[in-house]
Every structure is written in C-alpha cells, then in structure tokens.
Image 1 (cartoon, rainbow, N blue to C red):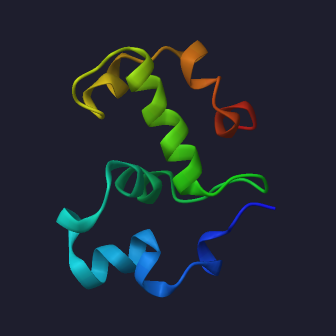
Image 2 (image 1 turned 135 degrees about the horizontal axis):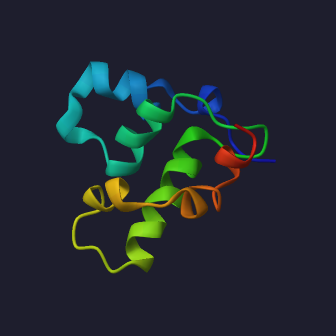
Length: 85
C-alpha cells in the first residue's frame, strides 16, 4: 500500500515544508506535487510528480522542468494520473 502524504511527518509534506522552510528546500518533485495537488488511490502526488520528471530523464533533458512544455498528450497519458482525467 502506498504511503499517503497525510501519513508523512508534517515536516516532510510538500505544502507544509514549503510554508515552514521555503521553496528552496523542496525538490522538483515536491514542487510539481504541489501543482498536481492530489494523487490517486495508488500513488501520491509526489510519486506522480516523480513519474512525470522521469519522462524528462528519458528525453535526456538537462533541466528537469523545461521539458514539460514539450510533452505530448501521448506522453502525458503514460502517467496514470492523466488516464483518469
């Protein structure tokens, strides 16, 4: 069973971490998880964000975030979150 964000210690939850420590302390996955907001029953928003960021690694992008503007619908649909939208 996947770990839900609510099950994490407060200091490890993306929203709370942002408020307590600032945006510079968050990973790209945590920042993207805040944008995604909700996960699925199977995966947390952080796990979904990690999957999205892994698409950038597959494309050999140097910057983990700039590739997002170039993703096709087909590539986005590889991520379970978008299958259900």
